[in-house]
Image (cartoon, rainbow, N blue to C red; front, side, top):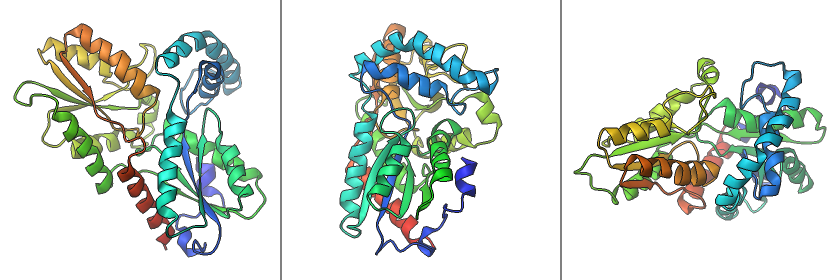
Length: 339
């Protein structure tokens, strides 16, 4: 990701050097992606396992791709069945719908603006969407990370191919970035509203627990001081104020070096404490994907039922929520006006 920030085309305050009112420009929404069908699972897993940002392994970087090939082939059948259970990943569809809503609002003031959606590990790829933006005549691209919190495994991973692509591009283009927007008051308000809506379905006079669930990160990432854990905790404190809450991470395999606490373990412990009501609130993603539809709605729901939890509720994902799109549009206008 450092390649992006050090590139001469990167503008931290693009309003100084680019005329957004006259020239063609675009917004590229960046996400990790996911297989939309079982046939795409093995390729998706290979791309995922090949990325050193996602999983540190005690092997030479030269061995990572061969190992990724073996692992993706070995695990693809099991993972494909899981994706079949949720009807394939809807991440691209939701990302495009969010982008479309943003374009609708931006188009009233900036008719020359266009929108694109690129995925890190599935189609359409980020380099393909950068090429598409150039073909459409865009001369500045605002990169928008769909992850409100920064982590090398999420934002770091989706920005890496942008830096690589810029090294080879020779035409007229500048880029800027919007990321790390988790603590914005507007976003906190949106999260809080979804939690309040979910809380209406439980009895607050009886024992309950609000569990924030975040995308897992390795201990190495936390130790590298990328502030992911700190920022997650700040969001949980802001949004969970007044509720009995805990911050947890997506379920993971025992051999994964993922920071604790694991959400599944916490649910079992809560059941042993005679807590029968649990509200789950994902806070490091904005739309439905494998992490919400399978890891939470199927995997954690089953764990809760087996442990004796009577009420298990997940907050609604934003998906194509128009209020989220309006908030993103405001962030884009701020970037345009930055001088």
